[in-house]
Image (tube, rainbow, N blue to C red; front, side):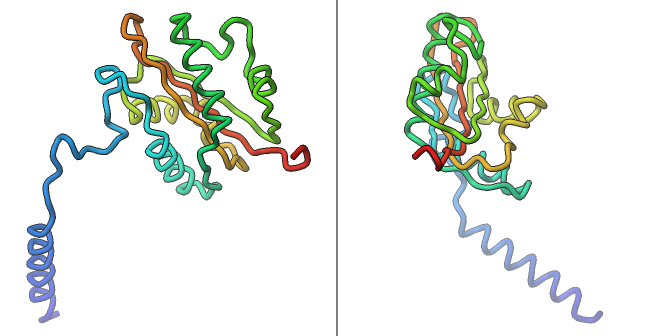
Length: 175
């Protein structure tokens, strides 16, 4: 017990010393998931989205996902369609999710989609989907290994930013 105060002081000194070596992040250095897409009009950063989703899935013991160009195109087409129609829906212009996936030539064993609107940052979209039981269930779908995510900026709409996330597992039998 006589060593406890020394250990505490040593640990505190080491922590303070290491803290002095770190830098304070500037506004420009904030993580991409806090970028306000309603102000910049920039698209979502797919790598940041994959990292955020994979971190969440890892806490549940689920497989990691990688960014898939076809799923990204499907997501981008849906985000664009919602922005053009100024509506939040899985079906814009009568095209269902299944129809859109088939039209893209993608053959999944599993495929799910989340859409959203009005979230200005990736962090907001992720939190909104996580707090919605059906959207959360999609993000935690077992077996999915691929993802596509996209946003569409519509500055004159009530929502400003439209989101689409597609998660899938390719059907290896059809490849």
